[in-house]
Structures are given as C-alpha cells and as structure tokens.
Image (cartoon, chains in turn cyan, brown):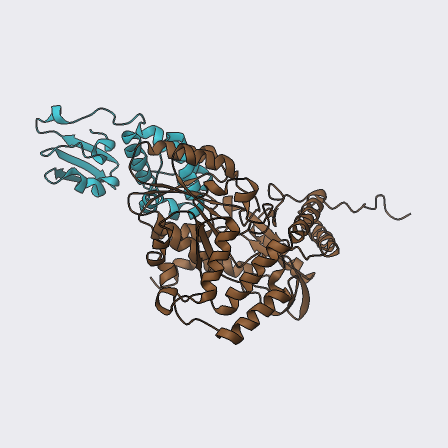
Length: 147
Length: 408
C-alpha cells in the first residue's frame, strides 16, 4: 500500500505498478508516464496497492504532511455533517455540492474554517475544481505538505 | 440537459417566493413621488429600501443641472471614452472627485459594479494574490472570476483572519491586494479599517476600499470610512459609486499612484462600454457640491438611523451589529422574511428582502436603508407597523394582555 498523498505529490516513481479499486473493480497501472497523469484516475480509488518491482527503496512511504488522511477526512466530515441528507453517510465519494444540502457560499465558509484548522490557504479557483470529499482531502494534504 | 436545467433549484425557490402574490425582485414603481415615497400597486408607499441616503434624487439643483446638460450636450455620449473621447465635464468630474479625496488621480466608470469589476481584476494579475472579505459585494466576487490572480477569502471584518492568510503566503512572489468595504450593504456594519490597514502595512499589501455605502455618510467631509478612521493616505485605491448618496449612477476610483492613468487603457470595463451621459455627470457634480455644502444632511441621516435602529431594538428585533445607513433586520428563515416583506408592502412600506444565497451566513433579512429626508414620524410609523407584523407572525412575542378566566 502507498499513501494517496504520495501519489498526489508525484513521488511514485516510474516502473512502479499500482493497483487501485474503484467501485469494486480492480485496475492495474504500470507507472510509465509522469505520476501526475494518474492522479485523476486515482482520485476515486478506495484502496491502492502498489507493487514496487524492486524499487521499494525509491518509494517514499513517509507521511508527507503532518496530517493523516484520517484526520483530514474526519475534520471535513465534522463540518459537513449538518448538511447530510437522510441516512446516506458522507464518504470520500460524496459530491459536496450535489449530495448534501449545502450552497456554494456555505462551501466557501466551510473551506475558510478548514483553512484555519490546518493553517493553509485554499485559493477560490482551486475550491471551484473540488467536487468530492476525497478531492478536498487531497488538496488539504497537498497544501499541508507544502507548508 | 436544457439551458435552464441548472437553475432548477433556484426556480423552485423563486416559485415559493412568488406564492406570496408579489415578486420582491420585480416590484414595479408605478410612479416615484419623492426620495421617500412612490406609488406601488396603485398605493402610496413609504420607501425605506432605495439606498437614497441623502435624498438627492429630487434635489432641485441636481435636477436643474441635469436638465441643462441635456439641453447643452444631448442625451448620451454613444460610446466609450477611448473611442468617442472625454467630454470636458467627464474630466471636470474626475478632477472634483480627486480633489474631494485629496488624491492625485480619479477615473470615472459607468457604474459602480464596473468600477470594481474592472479595477480589481486588472490591478491583481497573474502571480498576484487577491484577498477579499467573505461578505464582499457581488461586483468584487465577479472581479475574482475575471482575474488571473490567486483569490483567498478572509473572515468578515476580521483583521486577524486577513493576517493569517497574508502570513501563510510567506515570501512567495507576487503583489498582495486586499479589498475592503466601508459599510457592508446587507447588515450596515463598517470595517475595522485602521486595524486592517495596520495588517496590510505589515505585509506590504495594497489596499482597495469600496466606499459605496459610506460616501457622504461617514467622515467629517463625507469621504467615507477612510476619512472617519483617518487612513485616507494609507488607502492605495478608494472606489465608490454615484448611485447611492449622490442619487444618480456611475462609479469612480481615486489614487495617488503616479502610473494610475495606464488603467484607462487596461481596464476593460472602462474601455469597452459607453461613458456616462452629460445629464448624469452634471447631476453628480452638483450632488457632490451639495454633500460638501450641507453637512446637516449627514447629521439628519444619522439621527434617522438612531430613530429606526433604537426603535426596532427596543421592540426586540435582532438587528445588524451597529448603527448604519443600512439597518438589517434578522428574521428566522426565508419564508418568514418574504411573508414579513409582503405584509409590510400591504401596510404601505417598501423595504428590501434579502435571502440566501445573497446574504452572509445564510441569514434572511429585511434590509432597510435610511434617508436623511425621512421624517421622524415616518420612521416611528414604520417601527409600529413592523412590531405589529412581527407579533402576528410570531417573530416577536405577542405582548397584548390576554383575558384570563373568561368574561365576568
């Protein structure tokens, strides 16, 4: 397994084979292109397995930020809970503006709270590209790593 | 997907609004009688929602100036300043506004919206960082969509929130541009400008202050919050509008920057729209003279604000945080706000209703804007009417003594 944040910042090296599960389907990728090209594919992955083809040493497993994904997701869910509809749980796949009863202004206000919690700034144009909880978590982890 | 499908949610909300029988967003002013009265639905209404802070729309000297200008120079300029040239009066108006602020340069726009849209999106470009208050006006938000700069919001009226965001930028290259407003249009609260300026100085950020609702209202000479807080020299750009206190339409920006005039060939909302017609330029020039000559209008405005604000507060209404020419009355939800607004119209009083997503923090408001020429009687009548409606709707507790124990 390799952490998603490592992928997000392009630390997965060429030659690494990545397996990810999306909606119970399994996909394998040999990393030949720049890892960033895989980012969009991997965004929706629930679980990832990376086979290293003997390149384990080059794979950086160290947490790239002070924030574990669990912490980030927990914090996001804490802010989104008031906008949950019905019994449907909030997951990484939750599309924030569609699956929840939250308007665009409230999303921006939530982002401001998250910014202060994690001591990062998420520019508005970046927020506009974020649709799911997972994407928001990716962004937060990426910015935390740069801090 | 059809063109209008994406508005389905809004359409539904709008339908709800219109079930009250009136559409608050398409009110027809059948005849405007004065700054404080108009005929709506065949009835005379008290106007307390038109941003006409000094009541200058019917000032005889402003009206005469406009009429004279039409006779002398016609009804319109039929083109932009860069294509059709500037009229002598455009240039004179710009000089007079620059002098009013003690700044070197001024540029006049056809609307206040266009002033913000064009200036902000041009001043902050690629590689720069634009920092805006969370409760900024739509014109500021729309400028953010047009700029190549990175945009970050900070918490409303919170200098420490701005400071955190400037600090996080560290030593990244790029100009920092901070946008503030003198008085915010929904709740009538004003910015802690001096504290904001201190933060901006510390991080070497440029400051743009929009005095749309504070021109005339604040400062010993009516220049706005930048004057009342003593920071005019620290505001790099001051923006404002002619469409509120000055009773017409148009926008402006003043600055001391030596290269300011380059904006005349870079700001697209200035370059690619027709300039203000002679009549408007003339009435605005005259209105500015009235603002300078009659400080008593400012005194009257604030006295009226106190009457309305204190009167409503005493009845138990939840209001914006401080006295301001805009008095925002909080109501529990959207439908109550719309019902309340409709009941006020039935009682002969016109105010604005403001509901999410146009309002900060999802609040529903009745937005009242006070005029210097409202009479005390008009405002006291309004307080009585609002109190009655609030009790009927259960917004305020019904304090009518109840008969206990049946008839004796």
